[in-house]
Length: 321
Ligand SMILES: C[S@@+](CC[C@H](N)C(=O)[O-])C[C@H]1O[C@@H](n2cnc3c(N)ncnc32)[C@H](O)[C@@H]1O
Figure 1: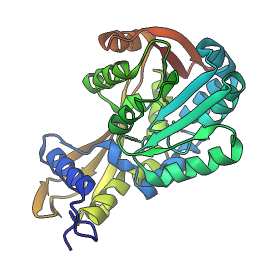
Figure 2: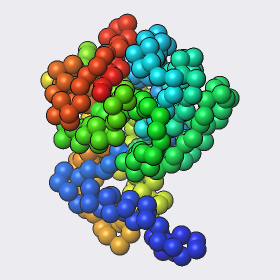
Figure 3: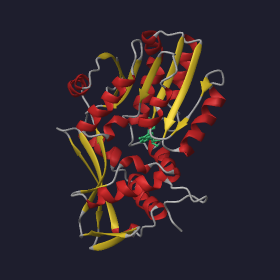
Figure 4: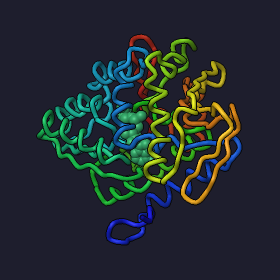
């Protein structure tokens, strides 16, 4: 079967792009795989379990901000008509509270979750239809670089949300590029809310990415399983191990897989060689402080408007204009 064609014989562009990016990454030095491909249905399920791990403090800290400060955020935004557009929305379990509170301030409120994973958007929709049925709900599946511009014709003021410290998955240059993309989407009166994980006790950060139950390892290895299935590859999962680091000065938490032996992996028509101990860079989760945020946002032409943090100072929501 031709993996690049659908059952009806049409070119499957997303599989083609996936193949191109995987091969390009694995032919680079060091080898790398893009973390945006972590989230097939199984990857999204594992990530939901990661969010429930005691070591993974991020969702709880962010949820505390949403629980205690949604009203202050709503008062700052102060719009009777509002579109909340969430990029990389996931299951929406944290956002539902913000949307509930905002609906008391905005009579005409719509929520648009955008995500590359259709499966997780179904979970998101079920939650929102059950808990806030009065709010207009419309999900858009696909890459947010494409789906956000597709909402351009709407005239309501917008709050664009990028939560979960997802910006941490970009290295510095890409983070500025992303913020420039957001800046290009904001009209006067719109706000951008960025949820960011802060630099802190390095041991606390490391244990969030190096959990004793091995869920983070499963999450990383699942991308190899996905490549095996979707790109007809033959990664031997038992021959790769997971390794996580945190650098307290740069603020970068990084995940790697490394090869336990010399081996050759076939992906489509290509063969990729791995030496024993050779690593694949899998994911960066950059941690921030205010000066770094200020530097990146001003490089993108955005200004910090207000900052909301949890009681332990682990995480912040930053409104930008
Ligand atoms: C780490 S999860 C966070 C989910 C949610 N925002 C939260 O804070 O719990 C990242 C989500 O972003 C989605 N995602 C990653 N890259 C994306 C892209 N380029 N376009 C759209 N969605 C993307 C993934 O499918 C996943 O559901």
